[in-house]
Structures are given as C-alpha cells and as structure tokens.
Length: 353
Image (cartoon, rainbow, N blue to C red; front, side, top):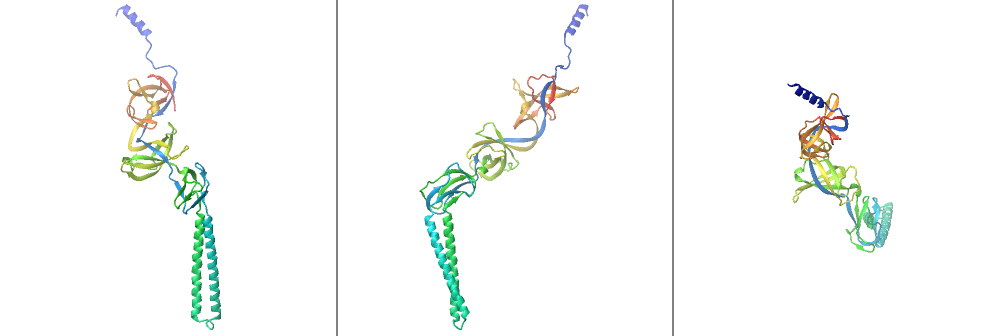
C-alpha cells in the first residue's frame, strides 16, 4: 500500500466513531411480562334493563275510587296504602253480619240452656226423645253460629280489601285510575316497579347455550354512559330458545350499578373460554407502523442493563384490554407498555413495572 493511501485510511478510521453500545442516559419505561393465558371468545350482544318485579296492583272488590294515595315516580314501602275504595256499603254489610252473628250466639245460648235444664230434671220429667231433640237443637244452633261467624269474617275481609297496599317496596310507574271512577274486581289501579331488583336482559345466539353460566365474565356499557364499562355477573340463564331469532335470554346484574331505569339500552362483551392458550400482551405495548406492520419493544438484559429491541409481531383476536400475538413472541419476555414512543434499537432503558 502506498504511504499516501495508508495515511488516508488511518485518518478515515480515526474520524469514524467506534461501534459501541449506546452510552446515553437510560430512558425510563414501564414494562410488563408477556403472558400465556387461556384464549377467550369475545361476543358482543345488546340488551335492555328490565324489572323482574313489576306489578299492576288491582282490586279484588268492586267499588268507587275514594282516594289514590300515590303519584307517579313516588317511592313506596312494602305494606303502604296506595289506593282506597269507598267502603260505606261494605261497613253496612259487616254490621249486618255482626248482628246476625250475635243473634245466632243468643240462639245457641238458649238452646244450650234448654238442654241443660232437661238433663238436670232427667227422664222423670222429660221423655228421652225430648232430650235428644233439645241436643239436636244445640247442634243446629252451633252450626248456624259458625256460619254467621264465617260470613262476618268474609265481610270483614271484603271491607279490608277496599284498601289496596303495596306488596313490596318500589316506585310508582303509573297511576291508572282517578278519584270517582267505578272499578270492577281485577281492574289495575297502580303500576309498581321494584328498582332494587333491576337486571339487564341480553339475547345470545343459541350456539352459545351451555357455555354461559354464573362464572361467565361480562363487561356492560350503558348507552346512557358511552365509553364507561361495568363488570357484571350472570344471575340467570333462561332455558328457552326463541325459534324466530334463534336466541336465548341471559339476565345479568352489575356489581356496582349506576342509576338504572327499566327500558335503558345496553351492550355487553361476553368472554367465553375456548379451552386453548395463547401469548397475549397489553394493547399499549403494540405499535402500528406506517407500512401496516405491528411491533413491540422488547427489553433485553445486557451487562446488568436493559436494552430496547424492536420486535415485529403478528396479532390475533382481541381479549379485552389485551391482544393475542400469534407470531413474534413466545411468552415471558419483557415488553414496554409506556414510554415506547421514539425508542431506538440498542437504546438503554430503566425498566419498572
């Protein structure tokens, strides 16, 4: 080699920086461990809030509406009066029944007195047939008294049914009659809704029947609170399939329920395990490049330090806040979930969880 060329080569090597590890200060990042977890099928369904305990309170007797004690939207307690029918005729019927009972009681007392007198004097004064006749009269009077007492109890119960009471605590959904209306037995007076037992009913495809139960994980989003999800649990699976829609009904309850009202619409994400396992990472760990590729930043240990390395991955199905990785990761690697923007291959990082 000529001296001039050797000199130029020496100067070139001196001017080129040495190939060495990045010596910049470590960049703080948050990492997580790549997991292998059971794969779950995500099913999106729609439903609405229902009230299993809804009653249209009706009357068992005919009468004139004297008072409606509640208004729509009012909360009532169990046993609270909600409506009253005019009981004037009922009270008169009860008085008549009470008088008839007293009359029957007096007749029984007289029959018993006559029988006792005949037995005291004996057969020397009264033939045996007379004593048996008086004993029969006592039995007849006893039966009559029992019938009058039953009639009095019936009239008392009918009078009590002029007052309609709430069978459970709830909210008045509708007031169906007004004061002055004549109602027949069975006429609805007030609609009562139990808001403490609200459920959300979802229609699921019949192909999923048998895979949904109390342990099924659900995330519910109310249309009244878009973007906010609530954990829910399955409280009932209705074992009846709708032949028209090919669906069955699932009732779910929210663990921490926000204010609900019957008729609200909602959507739910139902997770159903399919028995397999897959590598999953947090959605925050995945970056989408301009060319459509997906990558994650893996932190490798080197001389006691963490060094970032970009790793292309192939994604599968979403699993809630995580996503399945079908290629590129094996499980157990440390990937960056926060601070992964602008990382360079070989850059030192200070990893924390």
